[in-house]
Image (tube, rainbow, N blue to C red):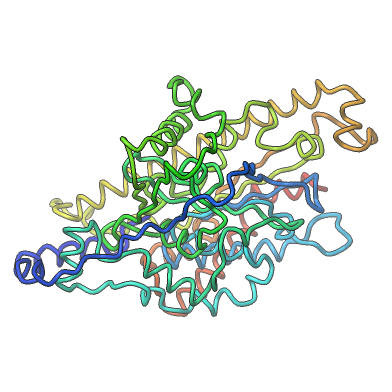
Length: 474
């Protein structure tokens, strides 16, 4: 979530609205606000999956792609290409770091890359550039300054319905895929897409637990519509409707919800999300969840991972014990494609004023929340590593043999979790300056797309924490 073209757009919206609002009001037909989800079809409880055992049980890599429109989608795509250029140390079969990716999450523009990679894996490297990055994704919605758009903004909360954008994404990229398409085959990554619950001010994770709280069926949720909801930046898009089907299921809420809603002394995010889940089941409190851009509450896409850890009741959760005893190295990469300040008003005594000041304040709030969230995530992973080591070292030899399959080469304290931020700075100061000038749009010149892709590849090779992770594998 960034300012996109909000400053010039809002200024023009206000001017034209004052001139012609009465005419447009008479002709306005409103937006399609049909809820995008469907009632639950199978009430059987299926737990959310997180980093399952695969061909590399001792390694795990998680990726979190930030918002930033087409710029973010292209930069994160370059990161995927860069990971595929780094050989896995000691592996004679020629595997790369891309083969070790177990989890990918995304918000806003980053959610497009995350979802497509989750569906296609290595095949995504072949055609994502041509099928999405080089196209005009703004063809899926209206960015024009017209009276109907102005009235929609003033009466509906945004100029467009994300439904149209989702339909464009489905035609051009996802081709009818639903979340059932993410059903796991061995070595497929877990995929998490995030939006924002605009009323309860919490991240809305497209997960089985969230949809269970809504009595809704995640498997039948179109991937394209989830991505569109994650990218529904305010003003341009009206909030997206998701219905709470209170009367359609008897599925109990996850066991952690009620205790977390009562306990305000622990994790603030866990408490807030649990409270929202309870309200999702209360028809007197809520009938429709209103979703906006995921970057509003979590522009780095980390809250899903952090929440999965904080709601766990064991030292190894959300891992299974089998995963926790086999794991030796884990790497979490936050791919930050947010651009830095580039306004001219700091050079003048006057300003910022009007909409510029409003956007600056909003961006300051979002960025500061993202930075604090990243710092919290690093501390959370450090504490988790310590808890895992203590738990592993408390196991008997019999328990290790049962969970791990062998005692040989067992070292309970041989575990490291690395966290790194891959940003424009990792591509070098000259490239960072160019990247920061690329606007947050969903259409870019081909040269800007290719520059962002190449910069993502360079940034991965330059990030020092990734180098330390590779060295630890040797």
